[in-house]
Amino acid sequence: MSRNASGLVGHARGFAASGVRAVRTRLELLVIEIQEEKVRIVRDLVIAIAGLCLLLCGMFAAIAWIVVTTPVEQRVIVLGFVTLAFLLSGGGVLLWLFYTSAKRQPLFATTVGVLKRDEQALKEMSP
Image 1 (cartoon, rainbow, N blue to C red):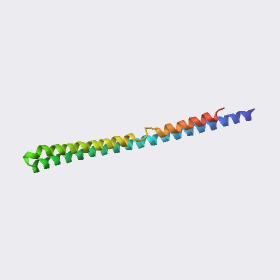
Image 2: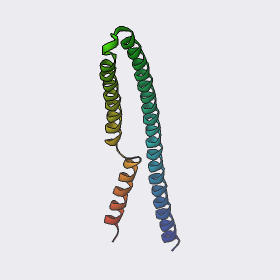
Image 3: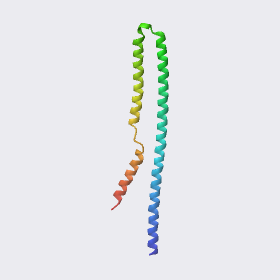
Image 4: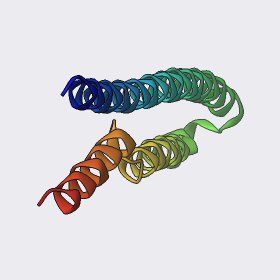
């Protein structure tokens, strides 16, 4: 009976160790996903801020150049076209940012997928 009890305890320890390893692996995966998401967010913010600053500088320089070089009677028309060009460019940048963020996987999608596969595997193993 002692041999049976020690075998049962050994199996329980092995099962517990496997469970702990599985949880640890999933937590490590979660940490990696959090780090990757943090890098993406910082990169997107830097790109967005740089794009906005460049757009503003270009806009001010273009407006100053247009005002100086355009004859008085054509300034209104030319400024209208320049304004339209800036608006379309800014909208294009925002659409690109929206498109690239929309096609990205949701946060923790990999971890959730692994946990679902684990759950399915456990259901298949149970009687």
